[in-house]
Every structure is written in structure tokens, then in C-alpha cells.
Image (cartoon, rainbow, N blue to C red; front, top):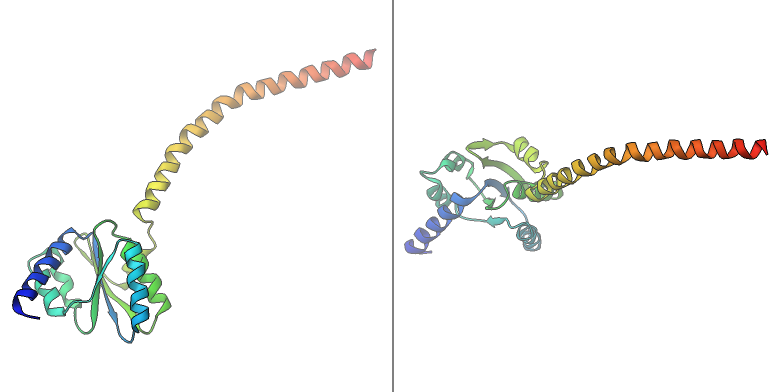
Amino acid sequence: MDRASKEQLVAELKADLAEAKSLIVTASSGLDANTVVELRSKFRAENVTYRVVKNTLVKLALKGTDMEAVSELFSGPTALAYSTEDAVAPAKVIKEFAKENENKFEILGAYLDGSILDVAAVNALADMPTKDELRAQLLGLFQAVPSKFLSVLIAAPKDFLGVLKAKADKDEEGGAAAA
């Protein structure tokens, strides 16, 4: 790769990482081609970018940015995963994949909102709901409140009608017994 291509790659990577919600650094050794293709398809399904880039080029792209502190994680065979839409999505895919491929794939660390995250924090991030799951929960909450309110409003007249019906049934039974 010539110098101009490297400079273009660094500029492209710097622009991508500036928009990223989170960045996760992984180490993979011994993964076969089919497993990597499977991993990439899982990332694509979640709109996550997964790149294997030379460590020196990543460090150049991170230089002078908020993410520069994470550059110390780039040593040996590394890859990075990031998403411009959802900070949780890369962590979810990586946690699941790391669990399936324990000895060949590991999480080195991550960057999220100005903080460097260790492996435990990345796993905790993966357990958080995604943006779509949060939206669904919020929508359910918005629907539940009026529904419960309506149930409360309907309950009093319904119960009152039940009492009147029971009284009418009792009076009917009393009238039939007297006859």
C-alpha cells in the first residue's frame, strides 16, 4: 500500500470514528475464513462496521481525537467494531461471538462517551437494551398509562351495575319464593 492510499485510509477512518457512538477493540487469532465471514454478516445485520486495519494506521487516525486514549489497546492482531447508529449493538454482537469462540476471539477494551471501558464494562454494555428495544419499552409505557386509566374509569360504573344486577336477581329470587 502506497503512502497516498494510507493517508486516504487514515482520513476515512478518522471521519468514521468521529461519528461512531462507541468503539470496541478486539483481538482475534486462529479464526478461519468462514468464521470471520459469519462474524461480518452478524455485524452487517446490526449496522456495525468491523475493520481489521494496521495498528499504526488506527493510531494515526485516533491521534488528536477524544478516542486517542484507546490507542494503547492496539498491539498484536486487532480489529475494531463501531456503529454510528447504536452504541450497544457492537457490544452485543461481540459478546455473543466471543462466548462462542472463547479461545480465538477476545475483547480488549472499548471507548464510549469519553471513557475507556474494560472487558467487564463492555459485557455490561452488551446487556443493555438497544435503541429499538428502548423505543419499544417507551411506546409500551405510553400505551399502558391511558389503558390503565381507562380501566379505572370503567371499573366504578361496571361494579355499580354488577351490584344493581345482584340486587335485581335477589329480588327476583325473593319474589319467586313468595309465590
